[in-house]
Length: 400
Image (cartoon, rainbow, N blue to C red):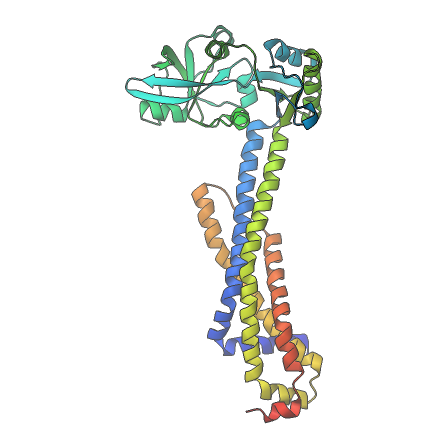
């Protein structure tokens, strides 16, 4: 028989035992569907997170005192002063803005509502580096930042917590922060961009002039600065120059820097590893399905012993019988895999809808899963096919 004829016979054998074929495919359906769903959800989530991080901190790097090298563990550590930040901007032409990453714990009060949270120190250039988006009111003036004026900008979550209404416009209201009255001059989106990623501070948050935060902390130095690189400049190169310059300015003190690109690369590596690990666990069900296929194929060989004997009696070779049963096994797996791909679209769509993220099942993943399922068909179909091909035609014809 040629290949098309063999495929036709294999398909007819499946259709002749519909229920048995369906039950046999369940393991493959679940296995392929699980692998496809896990990979699609993992990649979709990774893409969304990386896109947000890159959008919030593109072209931004961070510098802090210290070193990751064990040989530098005992090196002198110097905080970064305002003079240091001014020198970074003045001496590195590719640096667009440098800001401190200072935060301080505060207690905000409005009437009977109280919120314990963090306040960001806002200095000139803060909105450009952190990508702040003002929703209502306005941002700080340079005079307010440097003079420590008693004004504040609230994140949307802070507005909800203090005023009880997410859509309320609090501009003009007065709130107490650490016991001092501040006027609300604006509100911003919850995302605090690159700074929140560096400091690990989440909303709700409030923003205060840098001089006001310095009065609270009692220091004008910083243990974290953020720098915005001009478009087209190489972030890693500028960052290394900035680290070296700070060491020169502070008599050999050690500093270390990291960029958003490094953070996204590390996150991509971790999420890729986790997705692969979970997909590998899900793929175990494919092997379980393969055992079921081997069992059913052995039953099929027993049921069709006389048919095999007849085929061999009229000239079918070892290879013909082997090919026929292998193709039947592979067809079961491929049909089950196709159903599994369709089955995977449901959880992928539901998770994407719940997270508000676009998640797509890409072609390479589908081809990989289908190829793996076909390999399972071959692997677990070899023994039944070999058993069928080795049958003695005379004994097979006598089989009842």
